[in-house]
Amino acid sequence: MRNKLSKLRERANVDAKYVYENIKVTNDIYSKWENNKRKVPLKYIIDICNLFEIKLDYLLNLSDKIEISKIKYSSDKKKIGDKLKEIRTDLSMSLRQESKLTDISFNALSRYERGIRLISTDALTKLSIKTGYDVNWVLSEEKSKKETTKSNII
Image 1: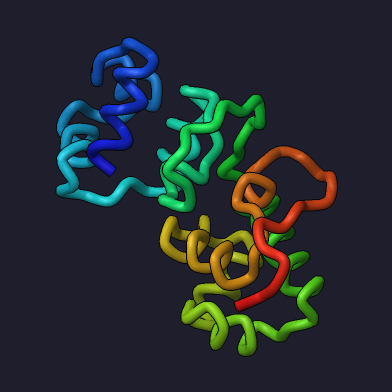
Image 2: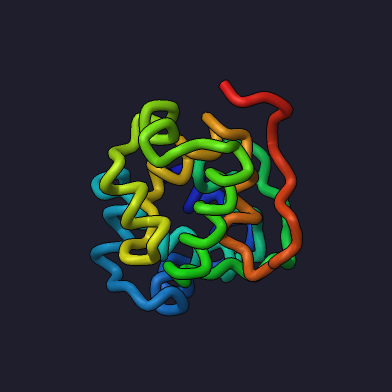
C-alpha cells in the first residue's frame, strides 16, 4: 500500500498531512499505513478514494491503474449488506455455498449482509475476485445494476 498511497499524494501534489487531516486519522496511523506496518481499514480506503476521486480497484490491488471516478463511495453497512445479499441472490447461492467459494466464514458473510459489520477489505477483495462483481458498485451510492468485472465465476 505504501507505494500506492504515496503515489496518489505525489500525483495530487499534496503532503501526508493533507490526507490524514481530510480522512480524520492521526499522523501516526497514516504513517503506519504508508509504511506497510498496518492494513488500511475499508472505511478509510473509501475515504481516500473519495478524497482523490479514484476508483477503489487501485487501492484494493485489483488494478495497477489509477482511474479517476466521480462515484461517491459509502461505508453504510446496511446499504452494502443489501448489495452483498443481492450478489448472492443473483448467483443463486446460499451463504454456505458463498462461504465455500470465497473462503470467508459463514458467520462473517452473514454479519456483512445484515449490516452488522462493514465488510473487511480482504473479504471484499476475495468476493470480487471469486464472483466477478465490481467493488465500485458494491460500495457506491448508485442503485443501478452492477456490472461484473469478469464473465465467469471462478
